[in-house]
Length: 313
Image (cartoon, rainbow, N blue to C red; front, side, top):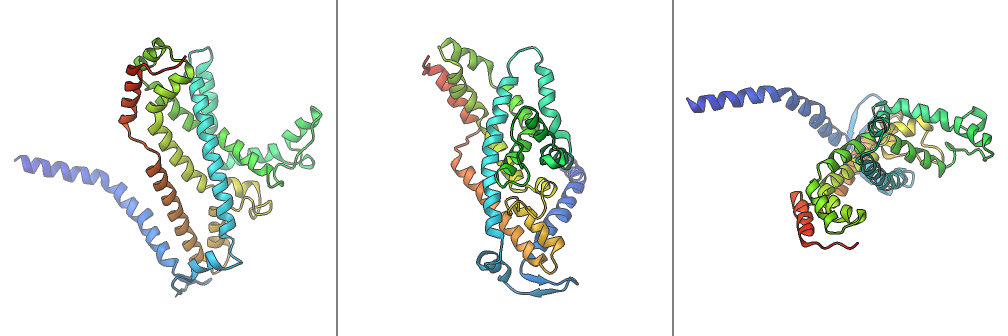
């Protein structure tokens, strides 16, 4: 009788999970396997497949006309800088909003709201703000008003990254909320014990808060890395063809160009997508191996440090 009940519960569970499982198989696994198959073929404008083995992969790395390496370089540059900026910025804001002061809830709402706006709408808004003087960009008008010099924010290959990084920080309210919730989960008794032991604010953060929130910092860093590598909308909406000087010709932009605009390059685009997948997985694995994340063990370390009283005033 008990085995029949267990079997019935298992069937019910699989039925509830079936839509997600079927969707995952049809919308994720099947397209991935098909793209792997396409990566070994040349696909003409009519959709005819011709098997060419590893020629697409050889073209990516060894053909002088391939733009993959430069696209990879600008994408990795954006990813590394963006992850560092986002984590430091969001953690700083979360530490600020975790304090008790008037207007704290209003500030929390202000920092969170931009992340609910669709990225395309956000990018169009920033494009209107950062246009050059001739096009009436609001930032350049403000610079003129205060006696500054207008800048070519969207056509200068250095300033375009200033715009991209600023947009990224403006829309990272979700990460701030996650950090804020994590900070509120830090045991108050450990903070109070550290204060009684003479720890200043920096040592409280270093010895107590950081070990407690380290797994969440690690997870958010991984997620930020993945989304940064996948940057697409900002480049397409701000510039055309990865301008200026191909500095915003990110990997996803290149793959989109080869898949849907250029004729006969769908197989090449599939190979590029798989290389990006391998690079992303490798970076994530390296971070996993070198991060030293130990889950609850970090909290235990914090507790031992508090009990040991190893703080400097």
